[in-house]
Length: 308
Image (tube, rainbow, N blue to C red; front, side, top):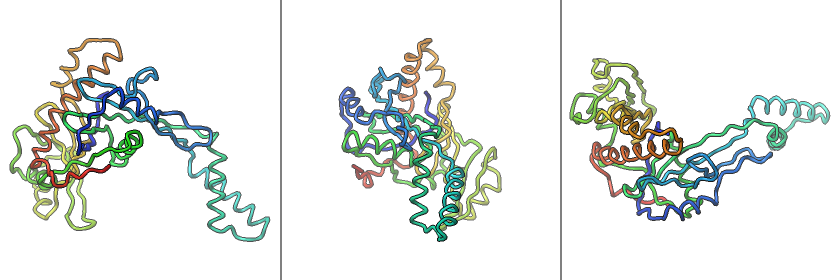
């Protein structure tokens, strides 16, 4: 269950809810499958997979949760085809055009008729709370999915005082200096992927993959005013990832040094395997996150205002 992304939210107040009480609060939004006329269902499921397990799984003080979303799949092309047939029938029978408001009402009727027969798609999103470090860490590739997790937690806890992390220096400015060959920390190794953007509104974007970042063409883009907004790096020979200007991390890989630590726990039991991997992963991320903030000048506490 190794995370492939790190989407980070910072607690502005201590998270001191007892894990048992926390799991009980999550039960108010336990996942249930979509009803026949429901297009979507979203709620909490047990991270360990079975309903008999708790909704909050604790290891070494870290609290894992898992949100499950089920969506009915109704292709827009099918809806439009049926809608067009119904509109044409009304216009032919009544000799009048179907106006926009009536068309939208017909579209809703078509959707309601198709939903009971629609296929559904389900996905799970894992996240965990680090009470000691003050982090909510989600395995999400987009800010929208992270906000969905935070919103679901808010509905169960009544409030969730978290904000995106902010640093004293702009990550794009620091990453640009690294690619220029300046101030590269000893525990950071540049890989062969980056994205550059011109600072002006709607500025041009250059994406480089499998490319030597020391090449003259990359340096020319920087000299022309572009900044690095995404950069692939390796940290301390333990983690490899792509970081962007918002401190979101994608394409995360736990390298051999970390995987070897997890492999020391030899077990064929899936629950024990999950527990061991989660313990190693969360401890590794807990060691990395303070360094991540430090790399970009430290935390900007003035902007740390809670979002309740």
